[in-house]
Length: 315
Image (cartoon, rainbow, N blue to C red; front, side):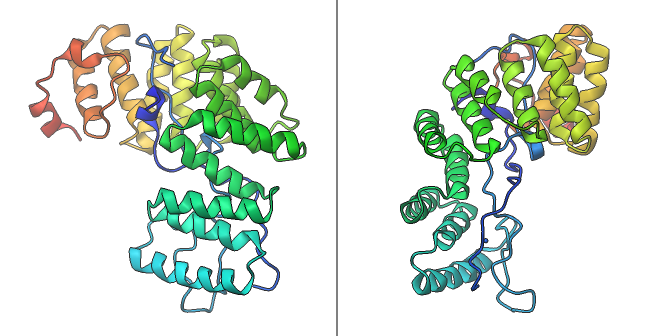
């Protein structure tokens, strides 16, 4: 798995355009320098349909509108309803997309991918299916397959939303093609917050400190309620030689989300290697280990493996 996946929280941003519902019926470079977060509004790999109800507000079957937090029974009801819509409108790509979205919510990636591919067979220009496929491929670590898919789609659909170019940048960065990632972002015609947040991520991964600090601050100004944005701004500050301000940013992120792995890991780094308080760093690392196992900077070798007591005391 790509190293940065250690800090991904399973709450990708809702894509900034929704699919049209049928009118008749929606490389490792940390070096003790912090873990990035893909969270909330930070990365644009999401499905694109998470706010479009598939039934009327008065229909008692209206369940699992976005699939998140829905019970298996709710998802089953939604799947049955969507299958019926597919039967009645087999040439409408939305319903195949919706099936894919629901299967993704049920952690059935194979079925999700099959239905999303079906949506694209119906309509090769159906961008929401490409967006969700991109997300699923990223989670599976199949970055090259996703990059090929996105490049073909963007070549055939030059007016596609810039969210897809930002998604392409993430996949290219994941396979080590930072130059290609920067080129994908340079092709974006707008200056949306999603694109800016992706630029922050790629700039930090590319050690472009000046660009990273500026884009991280802009992303934070766009969405100051994002814990991930505070974490990533903290990384940019840290790399710019401002550890005190970085620590404040990481702590702000943790006030918003006390389980955010990236910010916990970064606090361990700041305390141990910038403030020279190894014991405090060890405590932060113990908290991190409660929620994640990846260790890109091999902190366990620094702090030791006997974290049992601290794990019990954490939080």
